[in-house]
Length: 312
Image (cartoon, rainbow, N blue to C red; front, side, top):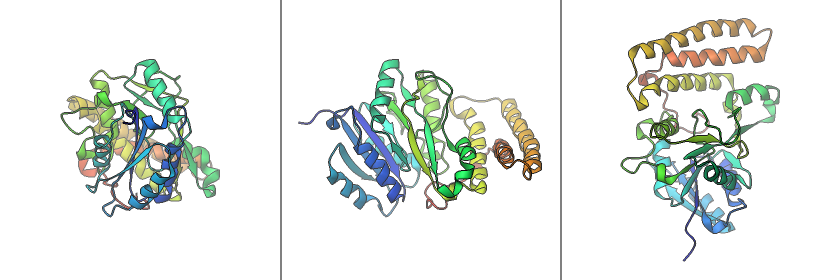
C-alpha cells in the first residue's frame, strides 16, 4: 500500500490546453518531497471534457500521481469543490491553469505553513506577457501581479487562491467550501479566506513561493483591465457583508468614496493621457475601481466564468 498523500495540488481548468500542460508539468517536477506523498488533481470544468486526453497523456510521464476529474457544472466554485472532494492530502495547494510553479514550490509552501503554524499561506504571482506588450510591462505588473511588502510569515490581506496552500482540516464539512453562488462571477476564493479568518484562522505570506502566470494579449488591453478593476471594486464592497451584517451607512460611505475616485481620477487620467501614458492608465484603472464600488449590487456582476478564455 502506498504512502498517504501529504500534499494535494489542485488545478481547476477551462479550455486552456497548452497553458494547462505547462502548469501540470511544473507540478510533476516538484522536488524536496517524496513524489509518492504528492497528488495532482486536474478538474476540467468544460462541458465537453476537453482536457481529458491531455491529462491522460501526461499521467504516463511518471512522477507524482496525476488524476483527472470532470466537473461539468459551470462555475469555478464547482470546480474547486470537486477538486477538494476528489483529493486526500493534509495540505491543499491551488494552482491556476495558466500558472507555472518552480521546482520547490510545494515544499516551500508546506514548510512555511508548518513553521508558522498557519492555516493558509499565499505566495507572490509574477506575470509573463506577450513580447508585444514589453513597453507596458511595469503597468501590467502593477495591474496583475500579487505583491506584498511584508516578510515571510507575516499576516496578509486577503487575495485569491491562485498560488495558495491551506490545511484540509480548516475546510468546512457541513457545506461546500467555495460558495456556488459566486461560481460564475468570481470572488469565491476571497470569501473562503474571509470566512477562514472569521473562524480564527491565520493567513500568512510566503515570499519565497512564487509562481509565474501567463497573461495573453486579450488581457493586456485597457478595456479588459478596466472591466477587471470594476469587478474588483464590486467585490471590495460586496465582501463587507459576507461574514457579518454591515450598516447601511458603511455601504453608502464606500459608495461615496468610489464615486469620488471615479470622477476625480477619471478626469485626471483623461488629462494625463497625452502627457504621461502610464500615470494616466493607473488613474483610469483606479477610477474603474471606484465605479465598481458604486455599482456593487449583484445585479451588475459580470458572469465571465464558463466563457471561452478569449472572451474571459
